[in-house]
Image 1 (tube, rainbow, N blue to C red):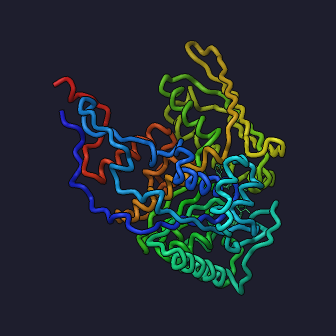
Image 2 (cartoon, protein in one colour):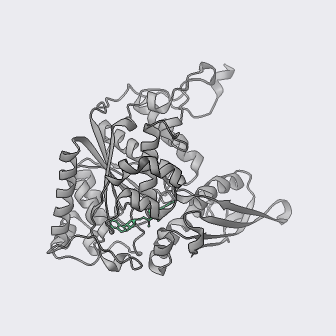
Image 3 (cartoon, rainbow, N blue to C red):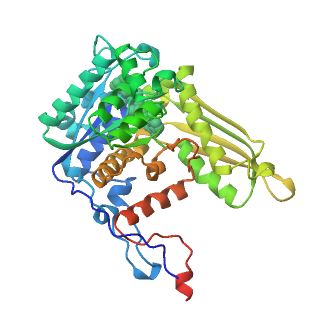
Length: 442
Ligand SMILES: NC(=O)c1ccc[n+]([C@@H]2O[C@H](COP(=O)([O-])OP(=O)(O)OC[C@H]3O[C@@H](n4cnc5c(N)ncnc54)[C@H](O)[C@@H]3O)[C@@H](O)[C@H]2O)c1
């Protein structure tokens, strides 16, 4: 029995020249990402946690012994060819911002000081209404939101020229904005552009960056749970300009654990009647999330995960009545070292109750940084391959993966990884792996 046959390999433009990675938001995650890439380039660190740098992909049968590194299997940009830039609400350069964020120790930051100090943020697009807890000092002034979008376009073009980049990618590493739903101004590109000219209050700062990027044909990844791309208007622009997009909300600490554990419980058909998740976190992200409106955006993103994995409509007796709560508490002494607790009430044979307790002492930005790297490289690959619109194969990286209207997302991390690797096999004309395994018994 054959594996599932792919077609011929797809033509992928080679990754020549430099790839610019621009991050709106140069806080803990962005600077940990930039510092880490430079440390790896200098041979003083290893790309731990990065699928593009250390992952392999099995090809053919298990007996074929073919498992190349992903970075040798598909033509990804090399980390030596990455250059960085970004925007922030504060004028601190990446060295100052990383020092304040307190993720990396002095021992790691000092040797990179020269490199990081040169990474100066461009003035941000800011609106207090969208991030209530921060008081910006470094932001653009404009006659209208259309004017601000033009300034971002000029920033991007200027960066590209200055740094002599062949291609660019934007990865949002800015704060979580207040909760918003799709409004009339988001319903079409025409309505959105009119809204920009009229400075419609429903257009968020993150949407101005995304609009500028898509307008220039630059891929965009949304690292926060912000509404940003999830609007008919920006999806229309991505399609029109053939740009790949992906989001949203990096899947790192507690939600990552949730998407590991929940598929296992479901696989064994063990019931769940309660899942209480709480966190303490003391970084600037925690401070922003201390505002109930920003927390609501995060909460919606975190709560959706279980429903799509456990499918209560198919298993009402096991998962039809789950009490699922997520809390984040801002606790400054914790810094970036988030501590998460999960209490999971499950039940088994004849309804007997059991409990699972998880205490995850994680480092948020250490978990997020490799995801930024992978997303930048995979989005660039997608763009050179001619893929555009929502990149569902990158769901692996997200708490709330984007899907077209009416299609539920895959949140199970193992299905997500299989989907990602099968996409790579498909691009290279290799057989897809179904794990049917009948070929070994012919
Ligand atoms: N670290 C993780 O594990 C993780 C996981 C999922 C999502 N996230 C999200 O990633 C984002 C970054 O996290 P972080 O820990 O680096 O936070 P951070 O607060 O350290 O950094 C965010 C930076 O964005 C800046 N900013 C806010 N609004 C901006 C705007 N409109 N334009 C430009 N800059 C702006 C802030 O000034 C700040 O420096 C947050 O939204 C967070 O919720 C992080």
